[in-house]
Amino acid sequence: MSRVYNFSAGPAVLPEEVLKTCAAEMLDYHGSGMSVMEMSHRSKEYENILDTAEADFRELLSVPDNYKVLFLQGGGNTQFAMVPMNLMKNKVADYIVTGQWAKKAAREAEMYGKVNIVASSQDKTFSYIPDLSNLDIDDDADYVYICQNNTIYGTTIKELPNTKGKTLVSDVSSMFLSEPMDVSKYGVLWGGVQKNVGPAGVTIVVIREDLITEDVLPGTPTMLRYKTHADNKSLYNTPPCYNIYVCGLVFKWLKEMGGLSVMKERNEEKAKILYDFLDGSQMFKGTVVPKDRSLMNVPFITGNEELDKKFIAEASAAGFKNLKGHRTVGGMRASIYNAMPKEGVVKLVEFMDNFEKNNK
Image 1 (spheres, rainbow, N blue to C red):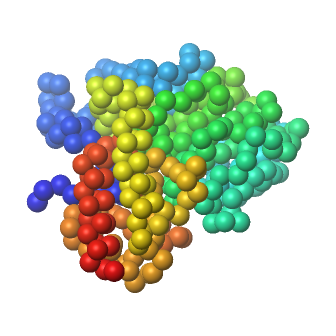
Image 2: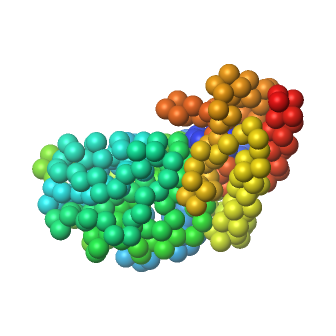
């Protein structure tokens, strides 16, 4: 069977070149006589894999020297707790809620202190980004939290909030490494890799060194302290070795493609093809305010649930997989991450155009 066009929001499409390298090295990694899956995480070979992955990641994102890069487990839901456990010194934090994941993060943080929702777009089903230029930031707030790209609702925060000097914490899971970022504007940025970087099981945290301290909330487990992992170079416990190796291959692929500026241009080109079609269609409609549209996740509807179901079924049969929208919003969603080729978006638009003509 030939490969399909996989529009899944995550776990998501990976570069074919990376998958072929994985296959070629599965039984024997670089003459070691074993798979990376079988290697000791304390071995010289694995130490080199981890060090190279971190160096390539730092180069891609231009990570300043005063930031640590941590390869962790537990996904976003664990970060929802780790952030307040490690940063909530005054037991106050300000959250900007522009989607389901920021909402979940705020709810988790409420277990540890006072959470102020300083901006939200829930009033219009998270279909836009509110004005973040002059927020009522709490004087005692330890940090301001955002989810920068909303996988479910297809919005992106393009202008970072004015945090009035407070530390900015950002969940960048579904836009990770899709465009250049100025890391120095953040205290912490983190992402689960399963959307745009690698296979599920790794969370990469980039954290400014002054935020890594022993001064954490009482009762914070050893494993949930950033300092534990920073002090042990992400090897305090057995890391998800194979998944980090695959992420490392993706970093190499991104460098070969020309880096994040080139990826941004490619992603803008792909997104424009799909958004232009939606804007001109009589049947399909995008659900997001145009200025806040994501380059990574494109939700759309026909306005008729039965027609949506028919479209999803026929698209799947034609090799366009995982177009069903998130269960909380319905409709359709095409996730067009770095590894989705332009050809996949062009063919999807052709299919949508034909479906529209055949279902008038």
